[in-house]
Length: 159
Image (cartoon, rainbow, N blue to C red; front, side, top):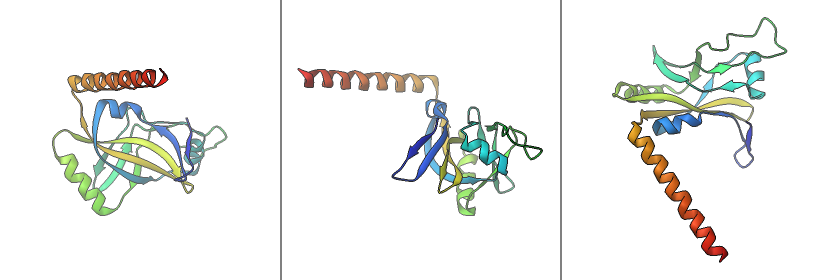
């Protein structure tokens, strides 16, 4: 699933759609990722999966875990472990702010999307708070109501 937004020069490689269903996203941050060359080539082919991935802060550095990047097909011994933890590149003040969020109960860091901008692989991190089951049901009901209202408006405009 490659989406290209020409106005911004962004090519979206992967999205974590389940994140917006399972979490309230409070804030988002853009971060770079430390990758090897074969990992970048594999990402450019769209062979990345953000499902069940998360980020945490260890010793003042942010790492993303469970992000699966398939090994590059034409690679060699330089291919890395697909599930290894990868360091994210953020400013120190952003890391300090994220640390403050994470120390609050119920907040976590969730990767929302991976994209290319000006030839660089970037990841959008969301500071997220988990949804309860009734919150998810309310969101579904609200989305269905909006869909029905839009359908009724379209039918009224046709007539």
